[in-house]
Length: 335
Ligand SMILES: [Zn+2]
Image 1 (cartoon, protein in one colour):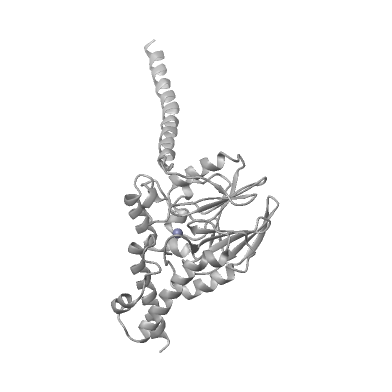
Image 2: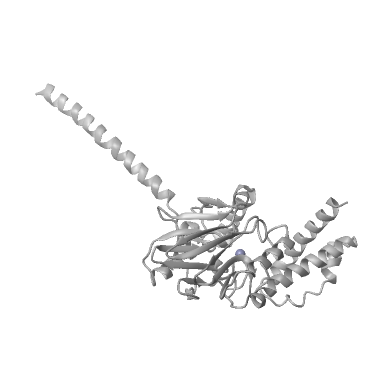
C-alpha cells in the first residue's frame, strides 16, 4: 500500500509537471503577447469623412500646431472601391487612426488593403498602429527610411508621449513601410487607375502624392498646405516649389492638401504654399549674399501676408532659420 501510494504520488508529480509547465508557458506567452499589443485609448475629437468624388473622401484636421486638437491637425484621404479601401496618411496618433476606421465603417465594410504615407513626419504616420491588419500593405516614399534611421525619430516619439498623452504612449511604435518607392507608377485598383507620384525631397526627406484618374482627384500630402503656414521639413524649398508646378499639370477637379480644406482651383489653392516658400527662399538667399545675419534678415522681412495665419508664431522663425542655414551652405559651396 505504502509502495503503491508512493508510485501514485510520484506519477502525480510527473503529471503536475507535464500539465503545469506547458500551462505556465502558455500563460507567460499570453502575458508577453498582451504587452506587445498597443494601448489605443479613444480620442474625443470631431471627425467626419467628406465626400469629394465617387470614391474619394477625406477627414480634415484643424489648422494648428502638432499638439492642437489632440493631434488631429493633418488630413487623411480614403479611397473606397469594391476591391477594398486605400488610406492615404495615417494621422498623428493610433487613436485618431482608429477613429478614422470607425468613420469608414459607417459607410463601407470593405477591407483596408493599402496604406500610402505621403511622408514620414509624426503627424502623418504615427497613427499607423491603429490601421494595421494582417494583410495590409504600407507604401512610403524612399527617404522615409532616412527619417526612421535618425535618432530624431525616437526623440520625436518620446516628445509626443508627453505632449500627446495618453494617445501616444509607451506601446506606440514607429511602424516602417512594407514598400519604399522612388519612381512614379500607376496601378489599377477597384476599377480605378491610380498614379503614385514621387518627388524626392521637397517638403520632407521624401514625398509622394496620388492622382485618382477616373475621379480626377489629386491627394498631395504636405506638398500643399491651406489655412496655415507650411512647415518646412526638407532642405530644398526651391525643389519643393518646382514640384508644386509639376502637380499643377494633373487635371484635377478636387485637390486634397496635407493640411487644410480641399479645393478645386489649383492655382488659387497652391498660392499660399508657393508664395510662402518663394518669400523664404528669396529673402534668405539675398540676405546671405549681402552677408547679413539671420536676425537682420528676419527683422527686415515683411511677413504681413502670413503673420496672422495659424502656426506662424510657433513655426515661422524655425522655418526661416532652416532656409537661412541652407542658403549659407549653398553660398559656401559655390565659392
Ligand atoms: Zn504635416
